[in-house]
Image 1 (cartoon, one colour):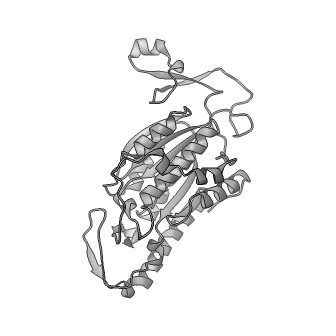
Image 2 (cartoon, helix red, strand yellow):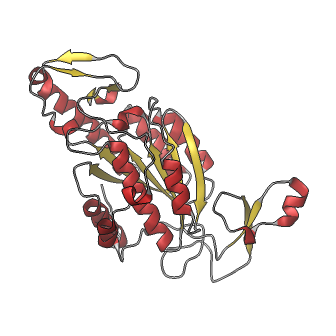
Image 3 (cartoon, rainbow, N blue to C red):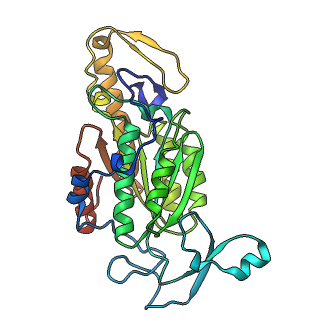
Length: 322
């Protein structure tokens, strides 16, 4: 739980939920949720670097299979596209990319900082919820013949998997999510600037985070993605108790990101706390609106298919969200 959201004060109450056990794809991908997303596409709102007939806008004119560029090989890529001449000279694996094959690139950015471990009674942790959303989006993107990658971060970029459209990419993404520790503080400014520079090819950036950092610095980092001409979606993952602050008895709130524990009477701070959290959320929403970034709130007590399907429909119709 956070007592002073935009000042970086993290605290916890109730079960956090374990993120250490090995989790299978079935734990992330609920068939009922996938059925509700059936027939929906994650489309680009702006021109993307690639060509897919009828689905995404492209800066390229006409259909072409001409060579476009090289990129480094990533686990799961089809070795048939390896440029062996380059390998013989550099001893490094690079793929040949063609305009026909450089479709929409979706970059999933998953916050694994310690505050994401929070879970109020009866709910999964924010981290687990974000992982389920990430897995569902990855499944969706791959089934529309596009490419998706994943980066996990806390105070720095922890792990990164480059976008790929191979069928094995979903397994690679889930394997990477299973390695996410969720043990460090958040430093969204540094992370977003780093990831913006790493994401060379223009695409769709999807941020999955509780965004617990100074809102001005958060928005500044998000704007860097827009400066690089990416389409950006912020999926703001929160626990319902972080808004309602339902605690009544004297409670010890445990610091999750290196801050000390504090014991308080919740009734004496509820009004001030709720005002603080609302100010924090409004600052993020306002910053996203000004920067032309989609903002989607996600609550961990929601069936994820409900807000995600509504968002995809709005996006397909060209409506701005947030």
